Image (cartoon, rainbow, N blue to C red; front, top):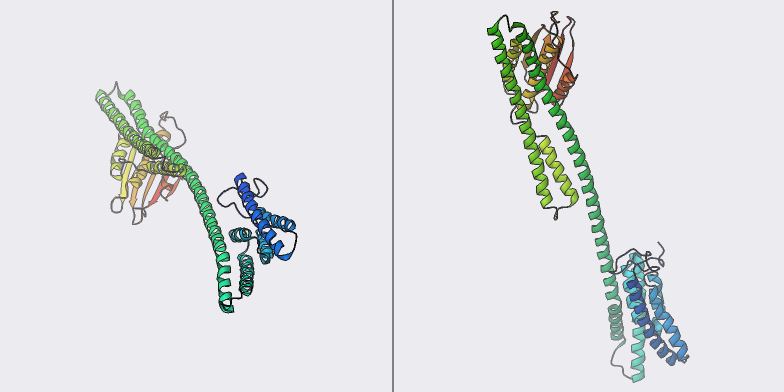
Length: 450
């Protein structure tokens, strides 16, 4: 940085240097400096004329020189070092009192290195002390008085120089430190605002992902509930048609079973819709509460709060859901539909966590549904295993016995949904045909979370 070219930010006017009138950020800064320069020019013109009379120089020439020296103050924001050097240069002529004071203040408040500021302030103070000492000596010599010793004169001169030099320098240093503090606080506020915007964007992304995951979960639940119940109802409807005329009593039992299955499907659907309704109310309520206080909360914080509510609502676990104790009833339903199915358990039965138990239940449910769809008349086997750190389930079925398959639609999402359910808990899932021509589905879910 050039010492003579260092600029000074506007003192209280704001704006960026160089963006307005030459090196003034605003018009009022130009007017202010022009006023200071005019006062300084008048002062220096008077002092120059006085100095010219004492030295025998033409008064007009001294006044003109003083006006030029005082007008240098107009350059204080652009070249503060030059202004101080001019003040030091004319100090022996007892000129530039205002020029020196304003120049020292501007120099200390500018971005000029402090060592240069200290050096120039020391030079100015020493020059002022020397001029004051010589003036005191001349005054005492002219009056013939020797009431003040040289030591006292030197001390008084030093105090006078200190009083004329230290206050503007200290004030300039204070303004410079305050300006830097304000700039650092402004930069920190801008940084915090940018961080808040980034957090808001990330929260929105997380909320979108959570909503997508929730939609996927809802689709899985709807698929499992509707597909299984409707598949059994279709199987029973086909059996009812076959025995309606031959065995009315059995047909009546099948019709009653059909009604029970329909009611169970409706109950599960109502539970699912109730969870969705509760989550929607939670998100909308939080958004409304945040919006009511938006006058005191930044937009980024509002977005983060609403997105956080969406994440919380999306991650809320169902209040009610299937559990492992209901697996026996699930197997009995398939057996009642004509499937030869066997249910076995190994290990000590214990609670495994609501979501894990619901996942195992849905895997078994979907596997049995697939047996009804794709392997009519096949025998199935369900094995539930409780281990120390995990719970596992294995569903296998043999090949179809050649019975006419029941025409049931298939969307091809059953195995994908089962895999997503299991892997979301950090478990393992495998499915594929067996060497005997059947099919097997196995899932393992760790109990670390529980």
